[in-house]
Length: 142
Image (cartoon, rainbow, N blue to C red; front, side, top):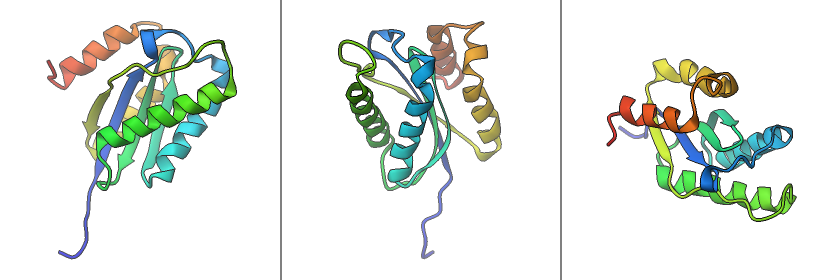
C-alpha cells in the first residue's frame, strides 16, 4: 500500500489556569478563530471549537504526522500568547496544565460538534467539573 490513510477525530478539553472565568463572551469569537488558525496551520481539520469562560473544547480531524500531545500543547501555548498580547485583562493568562483527549468514530462527528457548540446550554445544567468527570467515566479513564 503506497499511501497513508487515517480517520482520527479527537476532542481536546482543557481549562483556564485555576479554572478562573477569564474568557469573556465579547472575545470568544476571536479566540475561536485564532485556535482554528493554529489547527489549520498544522494541517489538521477544525471540526468544532467553543470556549466557555473557564475551559475550552476543540474537536479536530487529525493527521498522523503530529502527536496529540504536540498539537494540544501548541494550541494552548500559541493561544495563550495571543490572549496575553491582546491585554484584555490584568495579569497573565494561562491554560491549566494537562488536558483531556477523547477519540470518536466518524459516525459520532456531527453529534460531538453539536455538543461542543451547545456548551452554554449544557453548562446551565452541569458544571465543568461534572462534565469532565462524565467524560472520564464514559471513556473508562481512572
